[in-house]
Image (cartoon, rainbow, N blue to C red):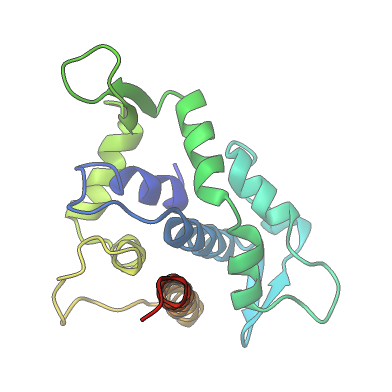
Amino acid sequence: MTTARDLFIITLDPKPEHAVGQGDLSLALAGAELIDLIGAGAVTLDGDRIVPGGADGAPSPDDRLLGEAAAQATRQPPYERIEDWLWRRGRDLSAAYQAVLEEDGELTRKRSGRLPFGPEHVEPADTPGRRRAVERREGQEPVLVALASAVGIDDARSDDEPGFDDEAVTTVVAAVHDAVMELEAVRQRRTIESSAFANLWRGP
């Protein structure tokens, strides 16, 4: 399991008080992938630029999506900025993770309510992967907790939570938080514009 897979699972288990936005989650998943790629030596950071590593630093091929992320890293200078990576790689990434996790048996579909034709939803299956994700969350693993906080989970964590040992990880987590806030600002602006348009047609 990767940090991105663990993050996806904990957004569903236990069910959060509010639904996590798919756009927010996609940005955080892209950040989680980048952190794992840095840890694997597949990429490094030069300031806010993502520099691909050598062939020996490639991530383990047993994770399809992480391998796909590594293959998408820009190979020629000027290298891609972290912010640009989050938006490009993050497009529809939550849907991609849901599909792969369902295919791998990490997620299961269930119907809400008692009626057989109620709406379907997905939830984590009882697997070693789910248990590992829960252990990381309950153990307050700093990277997972910080990324979960970015999408509104465990937002009331302690202020004296331990930081990151790696400056590159700190940089990526900060970029994820900034991107999620930027996305929320876009949502709010669209809501205000839609409301103003509706009021214009209603008239005084």
